[in-house]
Image (tube, rainbow, N blue to C red; front, side, top):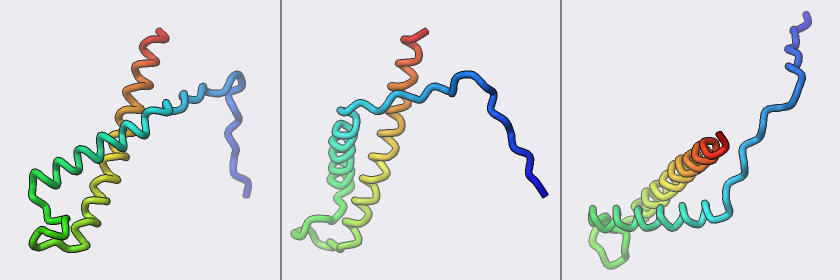
Length: 90
């Protein structure tokens, strides 16, 4: 039994998106750290050793939240940069 293979459309391959700017990741890391710190302080989440009710699992939640913020913000900002670049090329 042979599976049918689709043949290429011929012509030029689809253009690859531009790589992310060098400043994007440090900016996203800084903004995410500030947001997570503000969130922890605003909710009085016990993460410091001098706070009552501090547990190591609280730091796990902070790290997971930080990773989620970094991923979402980097994806959103990269998308916005590419959409803006595409608009400028028209």
